[in-house]
Length: 348
Image 1: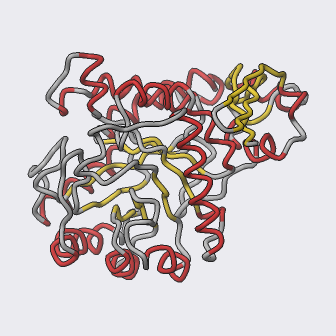
Image 2: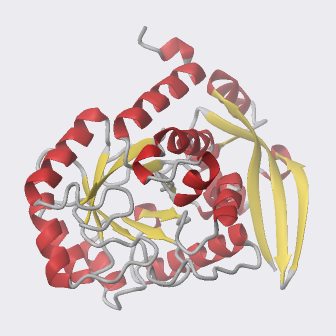
């Protein structure tokens, strides 16, 4: 039988801090300013799933509750005591959102610098599109796209490399990158998990059902949130067995990667569940297709407002990292969100 806890009854700011101090709430994702007072206690055995609502006090001593509340270590030098921003730098000609706009070294570097100035805590540099229907890119081409940008930006900024290939992981870390972000959760390249362990760097493990070229054809789950959780738990265990420290692992449930639009909504509605894995949580929903379906905004670049709605829900659920295209707008939205939760700390 598998057991899960999904935090509910969220409280924020001074109220959260007071209830956490009194033992009546737990700190969500280790964040002192977001608490949870209730949990959905879930058990699964085969196809049978049972759910019960419990008070925090009734589960506070359980291993899963302790994992939910454990403060997360810095990730690539980034403090995870509140939601941080990972800005997207695509060097590809066929990205779903900005394909071709920054696919030269100079334009990609300039874009990365602009995102950093707008409030990005991490710059995530990728050279292979993993949009639905995309085809793989050779290691040579991907390296030519990514490495000069990593070299140029890593001197002054925290850089993540978005790749599935072990050779590029090694080259990028050598060029100054601090984080590896792998949409295959280190499963695409047989050498990836040992490479990350050897390099001793933080890594994002993302859930995806199937390959990018075919992943949206017929995604199927018994229960999407629990199935994604179980897969990520298995990949965390695999990474730890290879020598990767748990404190260096972040998970991403993979919004839009082998999920229907409805399944994306279900994952976001149950996103606090993933804190039970005891690692940092990244959400990447920026400009995704389901936002266009909900808002009627079909060109991806016009989905900014819808993306902000999703980003704020993720921040309310103590998501540690938001991977976004629209850094300036997200940074401003988070500034208001944080100030409203901590009015005494607002600089006005």
